[in-house]
Every structure is written in structure tokens, then in C-alpha cells.
Image 1 (cartoon, rainbow, N blue to C red):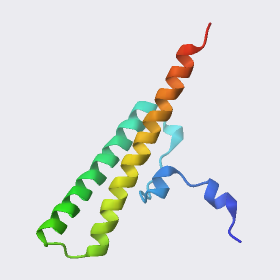
Image 2 (spheres, rainbow, N blue to C red; image 1 turned 90 degrees about the vertical axis):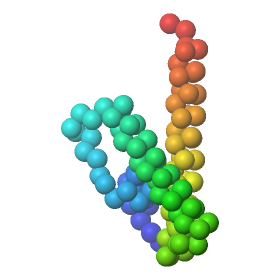
Image 3 (cartoon, one colour; image 1 turned 45 degrees about the vertical axis):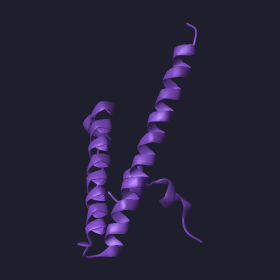
Length: 99
């Protein structure tokens, strides 16, 4: 049986295959992390669109890699939409709180 502590230590970036580790002690702000995440999603979207256009024109060299790029782009967009939805729900909940 696999060690569950290894799974809980993974970040979303690890799951998306980024392989980068961010140091939280450097004081990186939430806005900077959000901008970096948006840039990463945008980069994956560009790669996914290129893979789709290569598939459409028949100039794809590796079908498996093209399919992976498209799936990564789709999953990263879904993840970003869920993060946005959770942030909006949190904002609405906070705004309903009476002081």
C-alpha cells in the first residue's frame, strides 16, 4: 500500500507536472502566485491550441504528445475555473458576514 503522506504533500503544480517548487518563506504574495498560475495556464492553452492545429493539418509528429498537451490544457483550464469559483464563493460569504 502506498504511503498517503506522500500524496498529501503534493501541490497542484506537482499534479499538473510543473516540477517547480515555490518557496513560501520568500514572502511571495497571493497576487504573484495567481499571476504565475495564470501564465502557466495560458502557456498550456497555447501548447494545446498548437497541438490541435498540428492535428488538423496533419503535421503532428507525436500523436501521444499532442493528446497529452490538449488534455493538460483542458485540465488546467478546469482547475483554474474551479479556483475562480471557490474564490468568488469565499468573497460572497465574507461579504454576507455582518460585523
